[in-house]
Image (tube, rainbow, N blue to C red):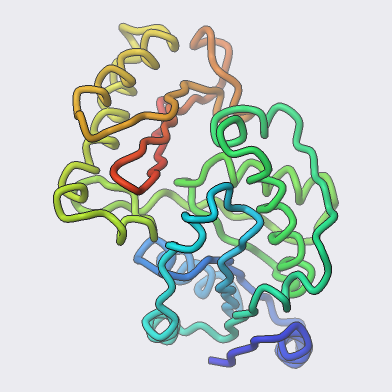
Length: 280
């Protein structure tokens, strides 16, 4: 595995690797890798000639400085995991390397960024768009792989690629879950044993709500899921939303959308967990 810490080193590595017009599958991460990340990487490796991964804890997408400071950083473990899936190129820059000048870019995604995560984390998706666009320009991937756990982020990145005609194919991948249903996340490492035992109830609540589509309206389902989450005193739900899976706008009637999902963000102890499940 070739490790690049600078843009120049990455540029040289990509130029050398692209000889013979090889395809590059890319998985951008913030490190603290888990099986969900590795599943994306295995797929990228199987569908392309080369696998490139980035590890960069992006400060400009955090609304809470404490969350940024406490984000898990386990570089040596991450590198071992990358070796295990056959990563060819790792780009691991520091903050100055990614942002040598103050960030001035401003991206707008309309209604996609005003709901759910966008409503509760102002500026978050601009930070995501800035770093992802820069990474795409540096890595020049053929395909880039993203998990559906961060479904709204995935929608934002699709809009970014379409709006700026970026030459990369976005590949959505299903959420990878623990055996008890908890969506895999780097933030799970910050849960206490008791919190970790409770956390799967988020998925159970969403799944049960989604199964009630034939007896509940979208708004009734939203309220049912919210009440179900409140039954666990340790949960502090930030939102529950039943939305059109294509534009993420709240649904009023089931026949208003070709597909729908139920979304939530829940605080559990010091950790904010997000999840979503398809309804149809």
